[in-house]
Length: 122
Length: 182
Image (tube, rainbow over all chains, first blue to last red; front, top):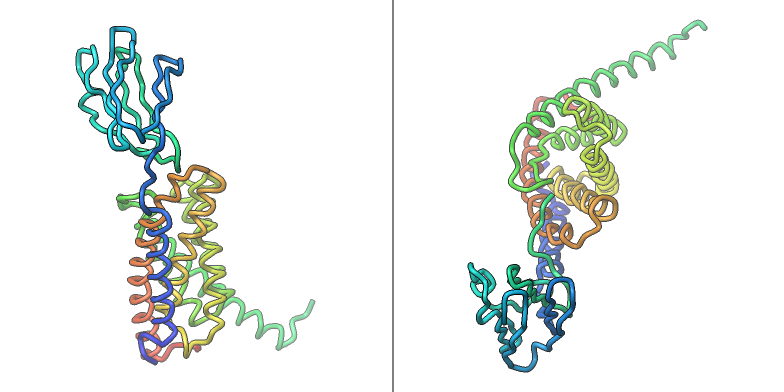
């Protein structure tokens, strides 16, 4: 009997299709967020739409953090913190993404659409 | 109770079968443990070469023998590695059940239609799907588990194919050696 039989090919094709479908299903286009929630410490400061471009100043523990919204994305323009890690984070736009200026206590989190995750640890 | 000749014959046949199962289970357990010693790039990914044994047994001695070998491998393997009754053990058992079920179902299509290759690939995917389902529903009900699915299923497809090729050549070699019962 041959090494590979007709049914084997059928099963291989179905299997390959299944695996491909799983990529399409679970790794599909990433959801873009609709709004950004800005909070200071534990308190909600504002929920801004990512649809309209604007810049704003958020008064935190140290001073004003300047935040810019542009073309569906949001970023820290400047912040009165020593490291400027928040500024180096750059633009964020996907649901669940977070940019934070911890010294100033200002945190931006993208919301809306399907929520995603940024790390998996098992 | 006195043993009639007929009963005696059955018991000898049974014992032969038992020895076969024990021997092949030992082989599968050895492969299982050797594989566990290798580091894995992703949790849940391993070649699963022990399944070659299950498939070859299934083809030559039928479903019951294959189920015994798989069950013994999962049980004794987990006892030796030290994962008995741990989540790993439950995942392992789920995978074995899912792949055995698939083996039985796909195998019932007939040898002429489906060979070791198809059996192996189908069983490997069922194994992985079962494990992902249990991991997601029981242990980590977080979408992160599902986003691992494509990678895990790809690994299952690749390793299932490799195992299938090995199983196919082993089956053919055994057939040529003429020691086969099927």
